[in-house]
Length: 279
Image (cartoon, rainbow, N blue to C red):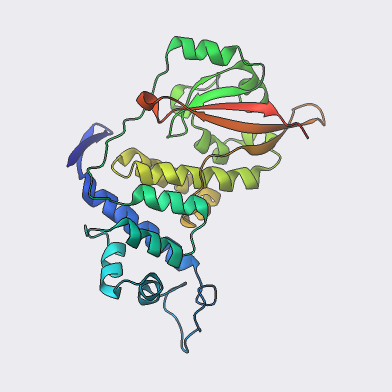
């Protein structure tokens, strides 16, 4: 299955199944590098390890598969993988619940991969719904682009209305906009969480060259983003508490971010509501 994507006016052809297999391989390698022999119940061998974490053959033993088979998976070869095998590998790598869900999402169950397009505009009535919210509220897509927001977002998070559309990306502004950073009290926590969520989108749209270009450009602008990106952490959207300081006073506002998914027709969209924290 081939998909043709445009980037800077150029047409790029990608083999969907091959791309997914390579993405799965990169992810497995990143998780193996994070797991030390002692954590897996293995005795550390004598001598210097050339790479951090477990060796491929050690993961294979723990998962009950051959070393050659596991190596092929990490190399991104298109080999058949049953759910039982992928579950065994996940247990061997001691994945947390979010990482486990991400692994299953990357798993090729011998079915063609659906091509998911990115929504770049919202219906006028959706903007009206956002406008009615008393608290900060916005609609974003899987690229972290803001498509609709209310006045409270401009007042408390960052002034998106004064920016052109191409500069209304939450991920980019989080690392490059001094105003947003100065207002966000728990910036370090939210930066790590946001990058981990964006990684799930990056892997989901591995066929879309926009994501690779965006990551390369933001990495060149922000060493902090580049460092977090190299960790290859993934997280699923969940209720998250955030703290904002208001310009001109010492008040700190606490919000719980609730992210709601849209319909199947717009599965890449998210309605984010910042509700005042109850405690």
